[in-house]
Amino acid sequence: MNKTILITGATSGIGKSTANIFAQNGYKLILTGRRKERLEEIKAELQTNYNTTIQLLNFDVRDLEETRKAISSIDRNLFPTIDILLNNAGLASGMGPIDDGQYDDWNVMIDTNVKGLLYVSREIMPILKQQGFGHIINISSTAGKDVYQNGNVYCASKHAVDALTKSMRIDLLPYGIKVTSINPGACETEFSLVRFKGDQEKAKAVYDGFTPLTPNDVADAVYYTATLPKHVCVNDLTLTCLTQANANYNIKKN
Ligand code: NDP
Ligand code: 8X3
Image 1 (spheres, rainbow, N blue to C red):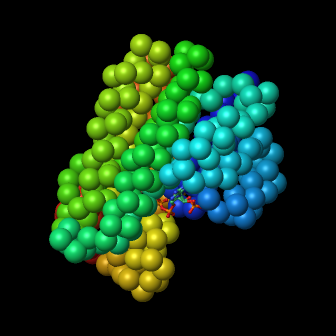
Image 2 (image 1 turned 90 degrees about the horizontal axis):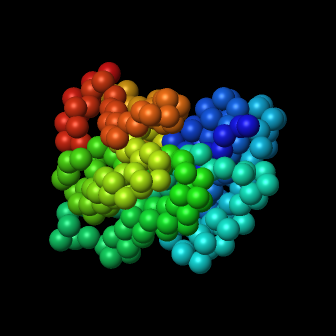
């Protein structure tokens, strides 16, 4: 029987690349995101290329009621098991000193990266517990390991993901559920475009002078951790491009 992965934030970047690699390898997909048209396009492309079974869930992870409704609408005949949950949906909003922080930016980051991840996980956990197996993979960040100047609330939200991953691993251990944190460094996606609110020049400049990770690099790491033998769990995997040592240090040379 083909396995199923549920990917939050599959409309772009790391989530979209992960959908592709798992589809290529025969997995069934449940793909989520707010941008419905993008979800439909990705579904059509993956079905054409790999003849994959896909269900789309179009919702905002910040909205508990929408999240509950979406998760309960999963077609359990098509997807009798959920083998992997990839908590990937997330964002940075703004970048600047904390004393100048914008409340809307803080709310959107905490609501998405922390509460959204919790909502989706909480709704999926009963399914995993009932199965007696499953794997939750949380996309944290190098920003979940160290803080950097002007990163304050984004870094805090990813530190929270780090803490939640560790807690989930302990609490879910009795049910045979694996929990992994994947912590990428700079990866060129729509991340900076979102952080800088559509300012293309500013977003592009983030990746000037070095070769960042690609979303496929991170998707490969997700695939690796998800396909290890049953008795093996990667707890924590940090990956950066060659020029980056941690959240604070990037020599920015190609
Ligand atoms: P993208 O902006 O390319 O993708 C973000 C995805 O998250 C989109 O599919 C978006 O979908 C989804 N998303 C955002 N907000 C919500 C929401 N409220 N409800 C549902 N879905 C949402 O960025 P990345 O691929 O880079 O980001 C993916 C994850 O990787 C994030 O958690 C990010 O923090 C993390 N990360 C990124 C790094 C980087 O350098 N790029 C490095 C380390 C970690 P839609 O807008 O359609 O809802
Ligand atoms: C995203 C990477 O360096 O902007 O988590 O924090 S960074």
